[in-house]
Amino acid sequence: MAGSLRAEQREQTRATLLHQSRKLFAAKGYAAVGLSEIVTAAGVTKGALYHNFDSKRTLFRAVLEHVQAEVGDRVAAAADTESDPWTQLVTGCETFLTICTTPEIQRIMLIDGPAVLGWQEWRAMDESASARHLEEALTALVTAGVIPPQPIPPLTHLLSGAMNEAALWLATSPGPGALSDTLASLRRILEALHTAPAPEQR
Image (cartoon, rainbow, N blue to C red; front, side, top):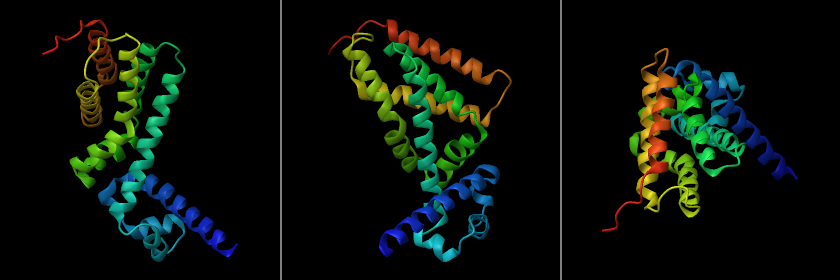
């Protein structure tokens, strides 16, 4: 009983640290937030923090994982409101870019994420978080005959890379019509995929 209570308390401490550090990272940026500020906001000791995370970087990585999972859930929820598989794909892609204009998401996932973790680790996390869902959606569309038969992995990386680059651009180059212009460009790219003939097999 005591062991389960300790585990529950530790999990609660971890959740509080993630919640408070996410708020601070979003508001001030990773570099401007110190561990003392985080433990003060969470109402815990530095010992409690180090019991859960061995460094500020590790804590930030856990926050980023939560943010990526949240974005993925919101994209999936939006796509699931549609019954047509093609409309699901378009809605999911548009929702992803729209969510990425949220200042908190921009700061943690798009600006600090690559800078703190490095591009290789950030891309690996992104691939496991969102590219997997995109690959599943594209596979289903090929199977249903909605888009021409073609290798899925390169198509997934092309579309995922294009949307990530667009999201990064929206995070660093805001303009009054930036999002609407980006969504219009995305629709044109997807529509070309929808109507493209099957590629020649070599």
